[in-house]
Image 1: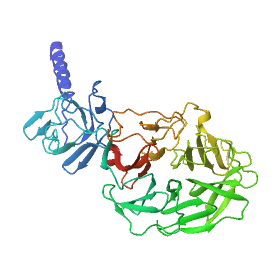
Image 2: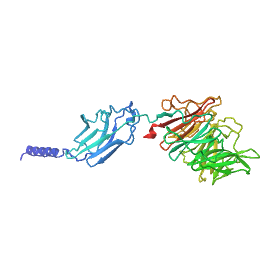
Image 3: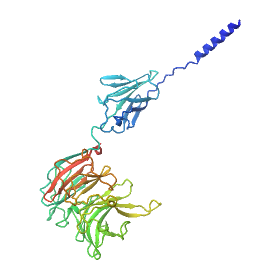
Image 4: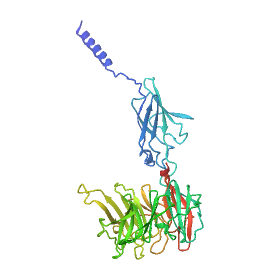
Length: 461
């Protein structure tokens, strides 16, 4: 063999070697989607804010978001971004009236036939297929919108009446006193009301029903050294508290799963707090922030709003807002009560009850009387009241920080109906289905017994 023959022989071997190193095409029976989202759209950010969940069930599946996309997110022109466990031979979006072969840059209209949109995936070896149901929706109503309606313009014919509503046993119980007797109206929906044939027994004739305090299904009231308690809304038990070195002033709040009231020393006239327990009253003389437990001169004894607060800190809390002091002066105070568990670190320098006036930090808050406050969703919400200028408040106030700061919310999202008139001493309650009821109230010329019901859209989803 010549020298050139050897050269040609090695050339052929090299050529064969190159052919044998060529990449082999590998196919797969995999059909699963690995991730699903949408390409970012700066004008439609709701699309990319959501996490999309992928479920696999034999040869089917479902792609959905845990919650509907935020209100206002457009779904009429979206581009999905999909990754697969293995590159499929075919992927296509199937609508009842059309099929779109996926190219990776497909513009879809998910508003058409939203219940019947599927992503079809065929494995690269052509042996397996999978159908994913695309279950993607946007909220059709604003989750931050409050929906209000007037249920009735008159529960009864009001004539200089005081009233307060309580929610218990899936019913609204409206206590009404005209200065001569107390009556109870009941309703299950706030629209239809019935006067109970039995009037509450055991209450004073001129009971100031707005000062009745509810804790669970029990009600509490104090007047003329008597503590009144009922567990059924009708039969009241009177407990004589005379002969003690203090007199009963008013009920105050529910706090730390206890019922609190305001007491006054008969000799010094100092005000302090007491707890109702076992049908008796126990004075509280040790509260951090008070001098020997004595309440300051600007602490309210009437026309205030109080409520227990479900705090983000998980500490028991309550607030007492506005009202009138002992000399009848409207006060600009927001008393915050807390209970601290026994100290176990440097971050817990004290244990027990503590009180601080938030208005010291935010003094611009109005002096108000006759308002109502509830905790609803993630807000404290204040309704009505009258200020130092004798102006009735028509706006609603919010607090997002558990009572420190207050502001008027966007009226496009929370505004009472035009039929609602500004007032004070309205009564407000929230039922088990997250409906807010505003009932009655008064001005210096008119007493109301109308009923308004409202709710936040997102609380109903």
